[in-house]
Amino acid sequence: MISMEKKLYTATVKVEGGREGKAVSSDGNLNLDLRYPKELGGPGNGVNPEQLFAAGFAACFEGAMGTIMRKKGIKAEGISIDSNVSLGKDADDGYVLAVHFDISVKGVEISEAQEIVDEAHKVCPYARATQGNIEVITNVIG
Image (tube, rainbow, N blue to C red; front, side):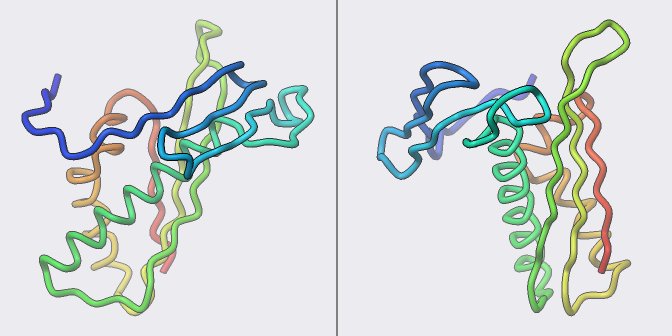
């Protein structure tokens, strides 16, 4: 286990009602209705935990990529990540997550972009936390 030596930031979000409830951050910037997606029998008229994880992981991963690029003096015209988080079952009928990123780094050769993505797996705290725990596939598409 990796232990935290210095806390930089703490996000505080109160959730009431689980997947059929509400999520509100302590600063009020996040205020969402949570709902089961239609695919899981819900109304689909709110945000679900998989969407939140997809957004958070991709944003953090892109930030890690940017940090690496700045340190190496690499300039890109832009980065975009199509983030897919799937909820499924394992062989023991337990719930599991899987992540698939399609990553585009405009203005950078694919081989160089792949190196940046590989390094981001070592820097991004989400990638480090999920490593060896869930399937994470990163596909550099251009």
